[in-house]
Amino acid sequence: GQIPYHLSRFYLLKIQDLLRSVNLPVEDVVKHKNNFVVLSNGQEIVGTVGLEIYGKKALLRSLAVDRTVQGQGLGKKLYQAIIKEATRRNLTELYLLTETADQFFASFGFKIISRAEVDDKVKNSIEFQSLCPETATCM
Image (cartoon, rainbow, N blue to C red):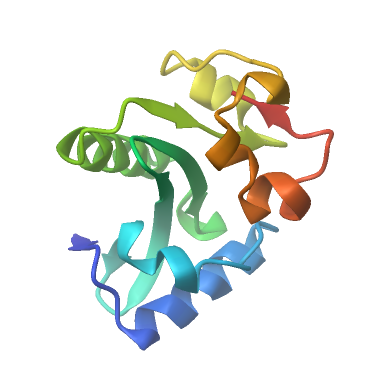
């Protein structure tokens, strides 16, 4: 099932644990906690994805599926849920940084761009400034 958007401390800790398990940054998750979606099978969080919102633009971040359930289409479900949320919030542009999932996001229409093309407010996020290496693909 899907637990929308207003996450308890319990879920925040579980999200951070999941992100760490797939080598994604956890810094700043608390700041954007109300913009996360999770998938669970009862008490266990098996997937998550979030948005960092800057006006009408956002950084899509932290799309992660627990290694034990990868390959079942959960990443696609999470992606669809966060796009629905972005649409509901009338966001006009989504950006992302990835080191491993550029083909996954390209399959949904994301294009590789230079960091210089990203909106300044998004570029000033901690993800762009320090958490994601310069080698990460910008889309």
